[in-house]
Amino acid sequence: MVEMLTGSSLSRDYELRVVNTSKGVLRWAVEKRTWRTVPCFFRDVAALLAALAGFRPDLVVVHAAPSVSFLRDWVFMALARLAGCRVVCHYHGTLHTRFPSARTRFGRTAGRLLMAAAHRVIVLGPTYRDGFRDAWRRDDVEWSPNVTDVALFREAERSPAAPWLADGERGVLFMGRLSRPKGIWDLFDAIPAVLARHPEARFLLCGVAENDAQEPVLRAEVARRGYSGRVTFLGSREGLEKARVWLSASVYVSPTWTEAFPLVVPEAMAAGVPLVITAVGAIPDHVHDGEDGFLVPPRDPAALAAAVNRLLDDEPLRRRMATRLRERAAREFDIEVGAA
Image 1 (cartoon, rainbow, N blue to C red):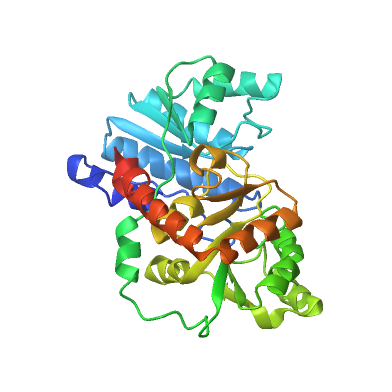
Image 2 (cartoon, one colour):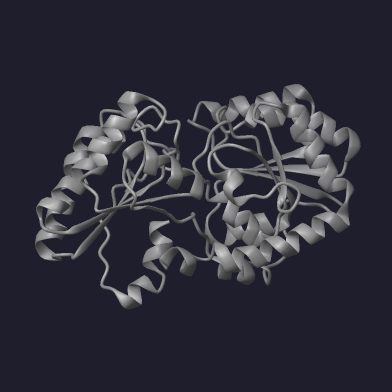
């Protein structure tokens, strides 16, 4: 998100500086507390102080995640405010996280106190906006969805055909972390019902496991269940190569148990790939059941398989959805929408 926004019209209209707080580890798609957390915190504080002193920004935008890591983000906001800057918190959390939260008294109190460091708060969807306005007792909470580089997908359309699909095969794509909370085991349970109806389906798993030890476990489980010949592990892909994977798919499937608003939704729309996705987080705000794909309950492999089969059964329906998704991506989820 930060890379896309700094490459947008924001960089033409404003002078930008980025303080990168990433640990630079591929598998750490979520914050994990290790011995590196403390030295990385002081590294990031030093980088922020240097930017505040040397760059002297008028506005500081902090991209914040839920859980204990939000305390680090609060320190960033407080330091920026002490330096005389206006502060925006772009919060990527959900209503139900433990901290800060909109569901518990402690979580609401913590959210009100910590978010007081921000002059403006941006969340990921209208449901979150309404919930956090009430929980944090502030009327300046706005929403802006995650976005994607729509132009990249148009460029990828001119690339060669995908080598991971044979003639006559149709790709069912899972894009994301190959972990239990993302529903990868639920997908494994759904695969037999899809293959029984559509033996031409090939399941494309694009992403990495939670840790190195889990990679062989997932492959061994697919082999144990007897459908390794219909499952392809693509690993991690970025940029044009990732867009090519998207464009090769007929259906995108996400059995995730919990989300805020994942980047895969605007990516699927830019690629014109109908979604079968669980109705969690802000996803129902942006994915319309029966129009952009199908919403299914979490932890329900039978419903997951039925929705995938419905799309593979009905090619005209899938094509209508694909056209609608591409139009929506350009209109609602392009980088410049996020920049605005």
